[in-house]
Length: 617
Image (cartoon, rainbow, N blue to C red; front, side, top):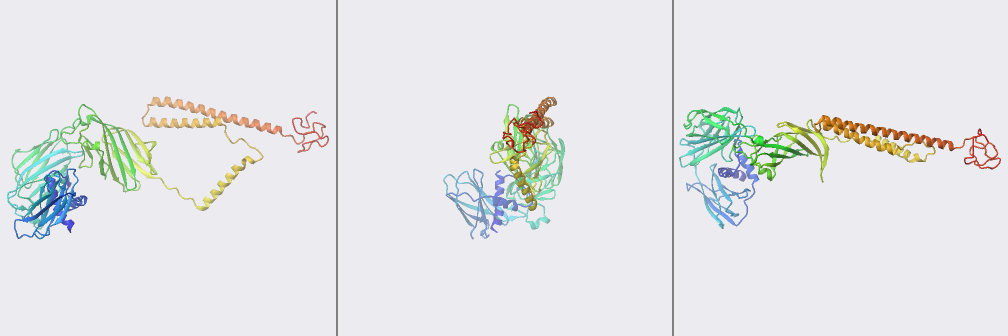
């Protein structure tokens, strides 16, 4: 319950912040509490200090019950980190905030909600002040809007990355002394304080936080609260570009005393049909002419030297780091004067948690309503390095990363953290992996990517190796053991065979020939992607092919020489073994097959003297 009461009070406080220009626009959703809840959940306590705020909620009627109201204190320090604290009034409407910061640069917003209407005030401490006494006035409301007037309506167009951004400001006048508000129970039978009809094709409606606008079909309605005096309501929306010159039909159900069309130098030009200063009666419809100037020379001065993308994939999201090296020509920094972006960088669908380097922030970057990243400048002459990081959620088993280049890119490098992936892509080709101290990246590269050309990578996890059944694994183990035993006992065998070790010269030639063939394959890949000309490819390939043929000849000659040497050695060994019928060199008697001495005369049968029995004695 307390959180819900805080939300009502925070609605008022954010209205005051928005009017001070300290809060970014927030998308309208038809009701404010959901946005307020997100805001209150993200704000820490007010910073501690020596000061205190004490006060009372006061009503114009002394009999009014001002006890039990939630009072919210919102702090805006100079560093932009807000603080929030709440308390509840006693029966007399009293409240207090103790131990808070008293820095004069901190702006405090104090507010409450009475009869569902927010009330508040804004203040800062004086230097050295440690206590502030305040009265927070509240009042009853009225639903009688017969005296309200729509004063000035201001319309301005600005080019975005994809469409036109329309900003409208409506000044409302309440001449009475009471805050005007039409309760929800009365709205079916009443007209709102302000109704605005949006042009055809309007999209992405946004409003300042706290401007209690409600979308009703193709109109925007304001039911209050409208405080005494003047109050401005401001909102914006997107509008498709229907050409360089077109008309925007606008109707004004609530009318207006004056219509102001804002034309920025270099931006779209707006013209009104009929009298430029004529008041708009309720229900009037007019045509507003729109002329969009030709694109400035920003595109002629900005080019991309190189783009790099790093991808990390954890199964739930891509973490993407992009770095674009921009080159700016000319003699002066480049900055947008019309409000239109100099450069738009499209982000993948669903990209969020966008972060920038400090150098990139100085380039005037912001998120475009289309979701793209808009660069407004200034961009210094020479090299500018635009660096950003974002997350892209993954909702499939075979994730696909897709990016579109903002300008022509001569060289695109993509590094993918290697977590056991197979990458499929039609536009990029593989390079040698890159290793860092703690990670290995798969490196892909592409040349001459055209502006607007999509680059797509599909990631597939490597298939896990299937386990081998136990009986088969046992058989493989036994077979391997048998082979190992055979290898170990082979040198112990009595009978020799052919030489099993190839010539070292042949081995060297084979290794060199493999390197040359790999160089030929690399040369063919470079030719296919356009890194070398056809003439250079032909001449270099012929030289490498001739070298490979020569190495093949050397390899075969070395193998032939090795085979011939082995044959000669075998013949000599066979010739050295005595024939089984050799005769004794001393007496000529026949010798035994294994005899070492003659059985007749005792002469030695070993040595070169032994001859075949058929040889002459």
